[in-house]
Length: 590
Image 1 (cartoon, rainbow, N blue to C red):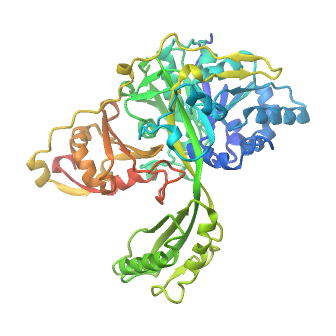
Image 2 (image 1 turned 90 degrees about the vertical axis):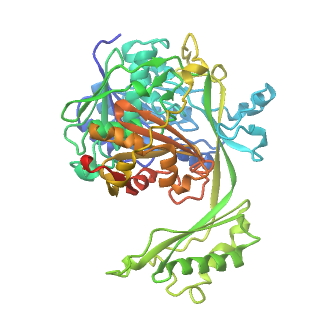
Image 3 (image 1 turned 45 degrees about the vertical axis):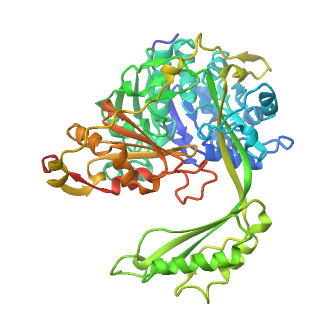
């Protein structure tokens, strides 16, 4: 057991994050562990299309290229590396890294964690009576009507901890929870057991904050105009103590900032509600308190934790068809009529071929434009079908309208028109009993170490998300005597996706605005402000310590980010959209 806080630095929040991140981390502040997260649900969907077990691959080669120049320095400094870049084939990536180490003449050991890939066991689960019902619809997996191409359970951090305890310098995983990439190393460092739910909850909270890289240092932050060095925000570091409390900071030499608000932004991102369910512990997010303890240093007091849920979440993917899209443009006046004509003309040519045709204008033209571009509105056109052949007429249908469509019809002259469709992947979230999903560390010599598990599971009462009571209605004086301003003038927000659900956290940086915010954002008010959510079940929670209202808009994103037809496919802008809405604010708060 190590009493000193473990310093865990992030170098990736998704596949495609800044390639130089490991370079920057190696040149930055000292760390004990570097962790990289690459596997968003949409990334898994994309990898699933191309992965062929017979041909190998299936991992994130981007990570391998990032790491290769630093192997000798990592060995010299004794830094441990933990990543989920193993994707569908962590053993394959581990073997490839061993080849790189041998070629470089560097003595580091590589282990991998497996057990998450349950695709080959779906038939077994069905036979044994596990229906794997969809988390939102309740439908059994057998009724999906398509053949899954990937099924991965979200593992906890103790497989990682076992590998590190056995001496691994680099640990490669597949689908673990994002926070497990931090909680696992913290458990190894401090010698925690699976029953140390409080410390584990603290580490999971810290891991949730740093898992998305620059999200915690000013990236994708409503207050971005106040962030120094925003052109290139640095990557975060979590310093996690033996009791699970932590301090979030960043490399001092790099841009960005770490404040209570940048940390709050990540805390309310992609959560289900006040209970943050993880395979290692259930985190009571409504107990989290933040304090600014120095420049770029935010402390998180010990967080309340309880046993983990008795079920493991499983992400199942299947190809449900094909899709194709093209961006077109029209110029005012009469934008609405031009879009309507485009829709009618495309329907006339494509009806009977495509399953869905979506024509979405983006934005509005300026009333008295100062340039042609202020008068121009983009139009995203997308079509889907079960077979790629059905979409073959799409490019010709779009291309036929230049001389017979609305006046001014054009596409981006610097972009090639789309010619071929691409696979459409859908997502099916389900649950399995946790004991059915192994979490196994595999060492370089083939030794297999099973991760220890909690002595008990959480009860349904401990897992209940509930809904916060509706606030009292705002007084007539407050709604008639105030001023109408954008909600964002007094709030920040962060939005994300949980499968087909959009989650939005919106909070008041100023404590004096909290009571006004919570009373303003009732469930009915949210429905009025977001008419797109009129058919959604809106689940509302309050986090008083964070001065935040958190809402889950169930079904806003269809069945998942990889398959819905929205332009903002995974709901990243829903929070900013909400901030742009005008609300009434009492004069005394302005």
